Amino acid sequence: MGKEALKLIPKVDVLLAQDALQGLEQDYTHDQLREAVRAYLDGLRAAVLDGTVQEVGTPEQVAADVANTLRRRGAYSLRPVINATGVVLHTNLGRAPLGHEVAQHVAQVAEGYSNLEYNLERGERGIRYAHIEKVICEVTGAEAAMVVNNNAGAVFLMLNTLCQGQGVAVSRGEEVEIGGAFRVPEIMVRSGANLIEVGTTNKTHLSDYQRALSEQGASALLKVHTSNFVMVGFTENVSVAELAQIAKPAGALVLYDMGAAPLYPLQIPGLGQQDTIKGLLKDGADVVCFSGDKLAGSAQGGILVGRKDLIDRIKKNQLTRMLRIDKMSLAALEMTMQLYRDPKQAAEKIPVVRMLAMDAEACRAHARALDERIANEVPGIGHQVLDVQDEVGGGSMPGVMLDGAAVAIDVPGLAAAELERRLRDVPKPVITRLYKDRVLVCVRTLQEGDDGLVCEALAEVARGVNTEGIS
Ligand SMILES: *Cc1c(COP(=O)(O)O)cnc(C)c1O
Image 1 (cartoon, rainbow, N blue to C red):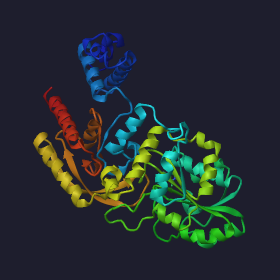
Image 2 (cartoon, rainbow, N blue to C red):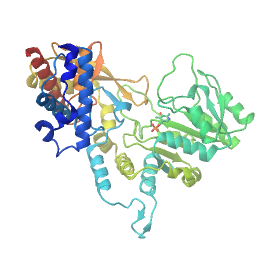
Image 3 (cartoon, helix red, strand yellow):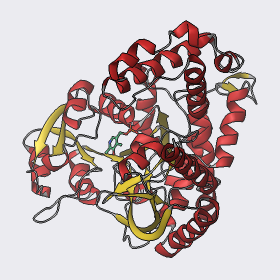
Image 4 (tube, rainbow, N blue to C red):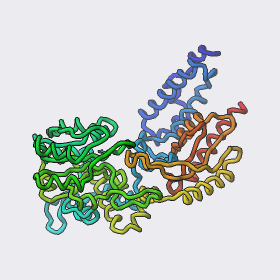
């Protein structure tokens, strides 16, 4: 029939009048249904034109198809997915998942009124940041702390408050772009600080910073964590402790945009010494900032810690109002910080901490269990346990590979890329890793209940292939 079939595609209103779509009117608004029909028809038209669809069904059949698609995809654009990529802080998948207890606490705070800016003892206006400052200081050893919307905002606020109109030395090896449109040199210009570039791309010596202080009048030395790349070979950079030794006598500040920071040395098998906030402050950093939803494993936020006089100035900056953190993130951050008081609690209740701590054997055990479940619940597909290399992600620990495990899946009659795509088109999409023409379900990042849903998704995809075969 070919392109003739275009003429047979039913009209939107005809489809909306079919029982299958009428039956969804309780769950979806009229606009949602109309939009779903339009999107479906666009896809159908394209498929007819490129020849992948030869025949168009009756209005009844098409409406049933639209209804099924809607049911599969749910009502919302933003919705939960299963992370089977093995990348713990997956930037595209919302970075850090919150633990169940933390999420429940957030829901409680959000559902009703709260004392967000109310002092319950005095019965008068309170301060939003007061809920969290003490506990952050406790777990980081800082004198003072402040939280804003995200770490990009924290960097900007720090520079704008402390360095406006003044020279700030940054190593050429640390003039990084974080992704999106966050480039350190540009952020500095926007903040009003004057960038003084020191050193070279691969090597910056203490003497380079020294010259910036004595000859170019730098008032601060800024270190930026090179979060999303590693330099190997002939390289050198200067530690916070060394910077502090030359900055203090010159009356200059040592600032550090750490990006991803663990609150305590994370138990990551095979990984050596890590910088912690506590250590950096001890070494002489004046202000350190980091993300709430990277290694800290909480909600989006930009956390600033350091000297009280400096944090006080940051708090007074008018821009804090534009960068202010909302109550839901604040609730998540407060509870996460409290969990860090006890490393055992943190390891149990902060998913990021738990996932990073999984060693190869723990991953293999999970992969074997999933493999067995697939064997029982989804007959007729290929599956095999494999060792894989997982990643921390989120531009947090570039080059660090975590020994993990996966179940490699093979559905007869389906190319790996198509299997990967279909697993994204189920009620709770499963985002897998495509590796050497195989679909890998990496277990490190699976959460409670995900194993069953992965099996359901595989069964649905396999059923689809079988019915295709019959028709
Ligand atoms: C991630 C990162 C940022 C930006 O943090 P957001 O929380 O995404 O705003 C800034 N600096 C460094 C070094 C980073 O790694």
